[in-house]
Length: 135
Image 1: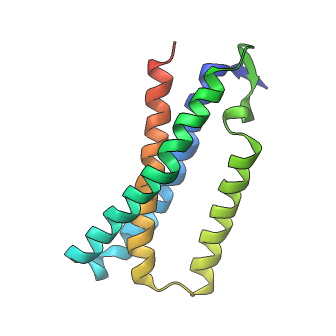
Image 2 (image 1 turned 120 degrees about the vertical axis):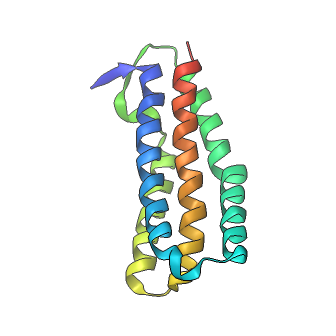
């Protein structure tokens, strides 16, 4: 199924926003027992690191790749390249494995997942913004 290349940005918006919301929800559900100024600060640090070093760059890279396609119609899964799909699969598998195994304490889940989920969700929102500003 082919879509307009600009639509790939909207697909990325939905995928990353939904993923971010789900991860953020897991963190928020675990947070009440660990609510403190230190934990909030740590969640903000996790958010900043992921946004500044990973997801912010990812949005710019994939927006540039998508808008650079010469053909207007593209296969709908080309909103990411192979490397991004592998990264996503590793993150999902690792996150599920971490929670199911019990290796990560609930406090870690609360703090880390809240920062990570917020960063993922912002990446999705930024893809959405790029959809609306890209002509």
